[in-house]
Image (cartoon, rainbow, N blue to C red; front, side, top):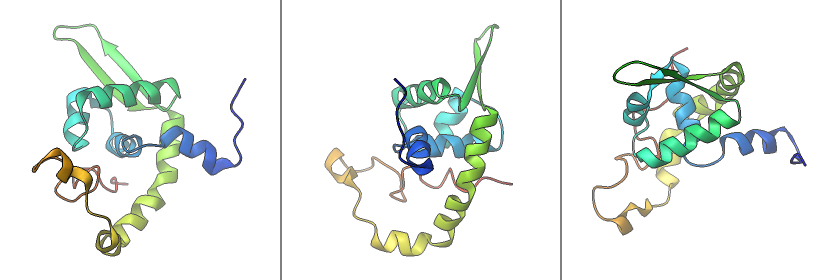
Amino acid sequence: MARQYHCGLDAAMDVIGGKWKALILWALHSGDRRFGELRREVDGISEKMLIQQLREMEARGIVHREVFHEVPPKVVYSLTPLGRSLNEALLPLGEWGQDNVDAIAATAPEPATAKRGAGSGSKTGAPGGSKVGTPAA
């Protein structure tokens, strides 16, 4: 049986919920990326988590995975039309975050990275650090 959503926001959050999916979408906004490029752009994500998130996004029709049969093997990820429309919907949210970053940072709780040891996590305390931000139009 298909899941019942209470509103459009409920449906959208089901697709992009969690710490990483929106950041992966931002990284793919400006064009196709290989796995290693995504890993470098989405600061702090583990290889295992990136693979898991990309698989979930592919299953939901947000991301397209294209395998090129060559040596060495090449895999390229891109946004589907559904993914591009979702990313366009996220643009105002990214702009709001950029416009209010100082106020948000001032009220943000201390990152939980101290429990894992010094040096882990991003320098800004944000899941994507400073590498992934508002995509170029």
